Every structure is written in structure tokens, then in C-alpha cells.
Length: 504
Figure 1 (cartoon, rainbow, N blue to C red):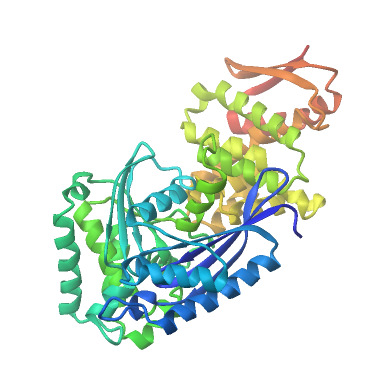
Figure 2 (figure 1 turned 120 degrees about the vertical axis):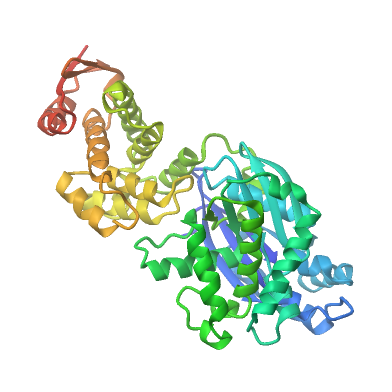
């Protein structure tokens, strides 16, 4: 159902042309409501004279017209179109831009390599909670490499090689000999000699953008039988990528089409893309790989619509998800979250848990009732699914599951059953962690059981073997005290502390 303003972003890339449609809701939340893709292979179509032929320009025109119709059907108010390396590198780039505008009515912005790197960084940094890293965006006709520290972009460069034009240069059929792979590595290493700063930041994670990185992550997940259908913020170790390179380069091109997780239109370009990525990783002496599902189109959205979005990524993402499902009472969610954090802080010396657990508890407390948008009577089950399967930005996959499990916590035995479903992601010790955090959430929810916020303020402190909770109330919290009483036994079993609650 259409509920707010919609904006379309079209990326004319070197391998494919993509459209993403974002919706801005009346609650100031945002979400993607449509994504469309057409393979174009523009980098392959550039002639030896550097010209993109008229018939190939017309093919792009036809795709843009189709995307424009889709945007009109979705009632978008604005469409922003950008073109990257293939058009940028074409000797008739001005003519291409003019023709596209003339034939479609859509003005097209030609991004520089620096623009492409900056916008990709904006998309990534607004969706992953990471301070330092090497950002690599392997497109069809270019590769952007950036270094960021303290969440700020320090330096970037755009290399004139990507998965498509490298494949075109070194093979005609998608099969790569050992000599061809060696030549690709040499090409990348020679380019790096002119950018020595890339080698000056060792032991940082390499964050990968683009179709090459996403496909490699998906292939790895299928091989592992990964139990969570999320690719954003998926982590891979160097050995896993080494194995993928060895395996994929040995599989004949036609057989690669059948590899689970690999897009069929990428079977002949995945090996050069992976070789470029692998060479950059080794040259930078990076620590591990992180897949970013957010990139250029996300960056265009954040730059245009939310350029000064405040607050940490996890909380922004949680509040956005909450606002997308306003059936959950936001005043109640805030109250439960506030009380849960007070309880966590009071128990800090007792539990010694890291600060990140507080973020997990806070997020779970904000979102624990979003499942009522599906069904009130089983909302905990639906809340778990919605949290676990939404792209909860700023959290690792393990942390996302911890948020979902904490949000729906009822008993330790049920938590253990959930752990068994996701034991390839979780730690066995997470069962106890979720039980403890979940007990705090349940107590906080009990202290606003009526959802009318009778508690104006709360203070808590450990005294010996007891946790004392003092409530300053606006009126007698009869329902709250009654509900909290049912939790005393479970709280003592989990925390080893007797619970005392008084109000004034």
C-alpha cells in the first residue's frame, strides 16, 4: 500500500543498469519498495576506438524508458539517474548523456571516479557500524579503493579496470588460464605501485561493495548451508576467499552457471572480479572480508534525503524499523528500552558484560512488540522473525540474532532450541546471555505493563545479594507490580539476586 513519498535512483553501471525505489513514510521512516535490474555489459560493448555504438546507446534508452514507467507506476516524485565507469570512459560520453536525456526526458549525471567512491562510502558507512577499513567497490569497468578511519573517508582512487572490461581483455569465453590470472594480478599490482598509501594501513577489514562481493558472499553461504538469509555485513575469512578463487577459476565457464549463489549473468566475470579483489586484499594486508549489501544507490539516497542523519547506526536502524511498524506503541517501546538500560547499568559490576550487550538489549527492547503488526496473540514469534530477517543495520549477523532472541525471550529452554537452529552463527554461551538480557527486558516490560507509563523515573542498585529497584510513579502501578511479581523467581535463578521493587 502506498503510504508516503517515493524516490527512484537509477545507476547506469558498466555491467548492469539498476533501479531502486525508496519510500519515505509519514512516520519519517524509509524502506526500499522496489529493485529492478537489467544486464547491459556496457564495458564489453565499448569499441576499440572507445566509442559506445548507437545501437548500444539505444539499448540503454529502452531500459531507462522501462524504468521510468516502473517509477510512474510506483508514483515516484523524483528520479535521479547517474552513470559510472563505462559511460565515463567512453570517448563519446557527452553524446551518450545527451542522447539519453533527449530520448527519455531523464537528466543523467556522469559521476567521476572520486564521486563514485565517495557515494559508495556514504551508502556503506550509514549501514555498517565500523570505524576503520579498506573499502573496495569492484564494478564492471572500474574499481574504487578507499581508506577510512574513525568513520571518515581519508583517501580514495578509481582504477580503470573492473570485472567486465578485465574479462574482455583476458578471455573470450569466460575461462581463465593460470597465465591469464597471473596477468590480472600483475595489472592490479602495477596500478597499486602508483598508490602506495593503500599498503600503509595493514590489518584492517576489507569491506567489499558491488555484485562481485555480494555473489561471493552468497556462494560461500550456500557452501556453508548458512541458516540466515542475509548478505549485508556478512564476514568471510581469508582462507574462505582463497578456496573460492582456487575453485571458481578451475570450473569451466559453462558449469559455473550452475553454481548455487552465483548470478547467471555473472558466470563469466566472477573470476576476474575475484582475482582483482584477492590481489587488493593481499596488497593491503587486510584482516578479513566484510560484504556490504549497501553501496552506490544507498549512498545516493542518504546523500539526497538524509545527509545529516544523527545517532549511531544500530539505534537509527532500530528506530527506523520500529517506525515502519507503528502498530507497536512507540511510547511504550521507549519506556521499556529506558528501564531495561537502567537495570543493565545497575548490574554492570555484577555481570561484567561488554557495552555492546547494552546496545543489543536496548534494540531488543525497542522492537520486542513489532510482531503485533502480523498477529497480536503470537507477536513474540513474529517479532523474532521480523528482527532476524530484516536488515538491522549496524549489527553483525550474530548480534542480529541476539536481538531477535532477546526480544522474544520466554524460557531458557526455548532459547536453547533457537540456538540449535543457528549454532553455526551463535556461541553456546549465547543461550545464557540471551536468558539474562531477556529477563531484564521482561522485567522492564512488566514495569510498563499497562502501556500508560505510570513510572516517571526508575533507579536500581545491587545491595549484597539483592537488586533494589525504586520507582517514582505518577500513580499507583498496580498492574505493573503484579506482573513483575511473576518474574521474581526466574530473575533470582538467572542472576543470583533477590529482586525488591518499591515505589513512591
